[in-house]
Image (tube, rainbow, N blue to C red):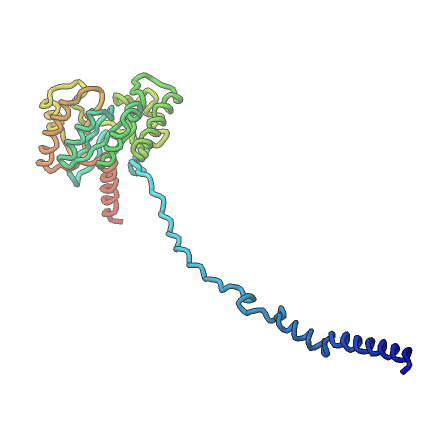
Length: 298
């Protein structure tokens, strides 16, 4: 055999075998292989349902019902019936009931507590005409006066007797009214001029402001500190229905007044009297007058 031919045949055989081996390295179906490898990764459209659906929202609990607002508490007001506004009163005109009004001036003071004890013991009420200066010093005592069911009135700030101009009268009465409200939570349209003086400018200003000016019909002059028996005798001998009694719970030691009160109240009760505040007394007069008018033939 020709050596050149043999060499060429060998080279061709090597090339053929190499081509066959190289071709065998490629997959027969590349699309299928590619398709199978992608099939192992789930498409985005087929994500698990629990990853696509939003979490179920919990319904929040209903808020508690809003409570209805409480109506504002009305302040306590000590005022006479309308027909007594700006009027001067010495006693009430009442014929159908035995009632009497005790009044105390110049407090509050520590002596007021002794008066309150006697009133409460005998289940009686009274009206206290207070000084603004004392209200500022003893607000808690004034508060106890009202809490015990008594009425409170304005007796000016300084207890002036001399003539005053309107500015001074305003200071004396208006500032005292402010301290009545601060200490007791009450407003008062009851005024008593110091010494019962009606012509020094104080009463005129009070009338301008629609106060009723409350004087008195019985004065045992307890401010002079007479014996308790003398105080009691004056009150008991002059007592009448609708009367207004002047006593004091300030201005010094009032032991005689306290002792007299312990005799006055039970003895007047034995006679059929009831003790009322000045506003109650005037309300009873107004009611009696209205009742009389209603009974008149028309």
